[in-house]
Each structure stands twice: as structure tokens, then as C-alpha cells.
Image 1: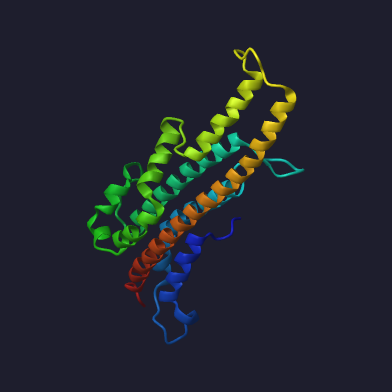
Image 2: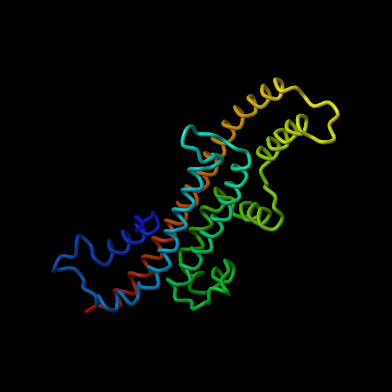
Length: 246
């Protein structure tokens, strides 16, 4: 069983802070628990899916660029490329799941196969809420459009829009070509290869740690946006629950 993620905790804290303040003293507003459960059931399911992708992203970032070994922490340029691609795909999935949660909380009734950011954001209920304002206030810091482009290139073109990683990868491949390339008439010596590989491995460690920091900060900013969104959705849910007072 997974521990509650940040989104689930933010939703629960905001919701129960409104519908059950200070632990629900006798003089507080009461509501119908059965109707409340009926209201939140689909929202809990949607939040559970978000909770799962949260854990996946955290695992991706924790392992970014590293090789699974029991002895030492080793780095691999291939694992770094794969890890960044996986992060971009998981980030996009998280964004889609948040759109679905908005759909569910506002009871828009849009089937998951027809869901898109544009369709949901153009809905009158959503447009008249604080959701667009919240997204706009965070959009620049996350650079949503560029991250979407990174994801699309990774999936559809197999390319990574990261100049630092691409340049290092080209240098790494060039070294191996100078040593093992079939069309290289004068391969470098073993000693020269080992010396240059040692230097590149040191640079790779720094690059991997730098990228881990960069994408972790991007994820933190993304979660700040998502937490603000989910708090607003909890308020929408609370209003619906309290309209069914006893």
C-alpha cells in the first residue's frame, strides 16, 4: 500500500479543513456522510492515479543517470538519456491526470478518450473558476509549452532537446569510435582511451547530478502548481458536500 502523495494530502487537508473544521465539534455544520462519499468516490480514484505517477516520477529522478549496482554509485550516459525521456513522459502523464481530476471535480462528463487541456479549460465551469488564474501564475516558471515540445520530440522523434546531454553524448561516442570504430585506421592506445574515459566519467557524474537538480526543481515547481489546483478543487468538492447538509 502506497503512502499518500502530496496531491492526496493537499486535497484531504483542504477538504476536511472546510467540511470538518477542528475535528467536527457538535456545533459545526453537519453533512450527509453517504452523499459525501458518493461525491468524492470518483475523485478519490482520480487522485489515487495521480499518487501513483508521483511515486514513479520521484523514483525516476532519484535514479537519474545511475546504473543499478550493489557496490558503488555508477553513472551511464545511456541511463541519463533514458531517465530524462522517462521523466518527460511521466510529467506529461501527470499533467493529463490533473486535467482528468479537474474534469471529475467539476463533473464535466468528458470521456477520458476525449479529454484534452484545451477542451477542459474552455469549459464554462472551469473558465469561471480560479483554475485558469492559478495555471497562468505558474506557467512561466514551469515553461509548459517547451516541456510539452521536449516530450513530443522524445516520443515521436526519439530525440532529446537537451544540448548539454547531447553534446556530452557526442563526445562519449566519438571516444569509443576513435578506439573501436571499424573505419578508424589508427585507433588510440589503451592507455589514452582509459585516460580520456576517466575524464569523461568524472564529467558525466557532474552532468548527471546537475540534470537531477534541474529536473527535480522543475518537478517541484510543477507540484506547487498542482497543489494549488487541487486545493481549489477541494473547495469545489466541499461546496458540493455542504449543499447536502443534514
